[in-house]
Each structure stands twice: as C-alpha cells, then as structure tokens.
Length: 71
Image (cartoon, rainbow, N blue to C red; front, side):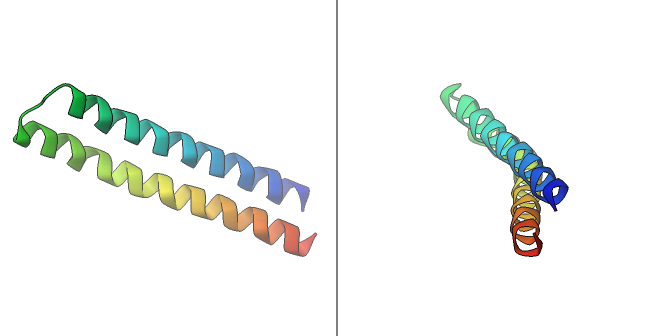
C-alpha cells in the first residue's frame, strides 16, 4: 500500500504544480494589460489544463486515502 500512497502523493503534487502554473500564467496575462479579447483567449486556453490539474490532484488524493485505509 506504500506504493499507492506515494504514487498518489506524486500525482497530487504534479496537479498542484500545474494549478500554480495556471494561476501564474493568467496572472501574468492580466498584468500585461492585454485587451479583453486577448485575455479571454488566454483564459480559454488555460481552463482545460486547470480542470485536468484539479482532476489529477483529486485522483492523487483519493489514492492516498485509499492506501491509508487499506494499509
């Protein structure tokens, strides 16, 4: 079960890193003073990656909990 816990922890950290990247990417675009259309395009490109990162983090946390419960 240790492998399940550590694998889940790694997945959660990767998801968290992607979430931080998404936040920084949109924050930099906001500070750049882009037009409304350019800002909308930037956010639309980041939303699928953001959703995937949340899903990855959730799966990782579920793996950790499952590993603790089974261990």
